[in-house]
Picture: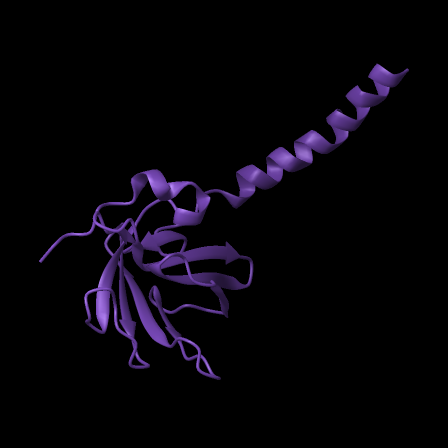
Length: 149
């Protein structure tokens, strides 16, 4: 009786799960998704420095997970963007939070420009983040060594 019940439950719920997965599909190139990062490893100290942004699509917009690294990962901030336009977003954070513009270009690049006086790891107000595995999701193995100037 128990094995018949398992078959019935799997038979009922599995097609629904498969149909949802197939229907959702992959995000289009016009949809902000994935993780973009400038985080690098300083060879001398082992410090992680840079910025990482992950886009998490949903049915009514996109959530954005923003995290700076200044020797170690700082506390991440979650933002919600209702309707990005032309793969461009603008975040104006109140109460001393981070403010920036970001625009996707090409297949794997995100241009980030701080609008609140904050600077990137190189001291500039803008930089290009490359798409890659998130640092927090096991991407530490893929973190490049910082270029020396």
